[in-house]
Length: 146
Image (cartoon, rainbow, N blue to C red; front, side, top):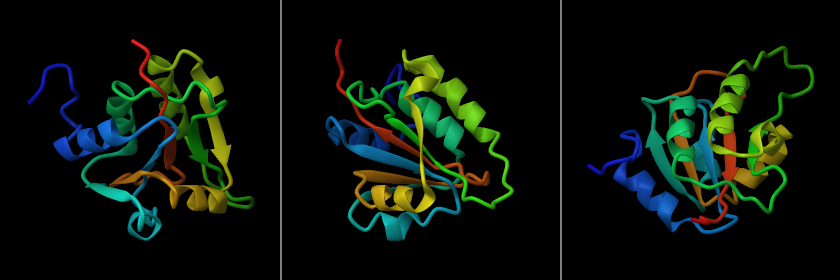
């Protein structure tokens, strides 16, 4: 174990986060996301016993968001016609605001099928047990400045 590192960050996940370079992306996927098929060219990390919020909170403690990109934190848009509420997005925004100086301005939305296409290009995908719908998050890594 290490001091100052959230316990939820496994050695495998820490290794992946360290390997990632500027502009690499990681997806934290809900339980319905096709992580294995989308992640054929990515590192897929299974964290089925955890939700997206707790993983997101831990990752953002050690992971800088890309300051050169307007929206380095992306959510999957709700499909037109879907009558789905997304209260988890507010939880994500509160977590993101703790670690990102731009606050909610750094959060964007990507249409569902475009999100899948971008996820196929991600460096890594974390498969979670999250049951909330449209709970997928994509983060783009920035640089450490201190």
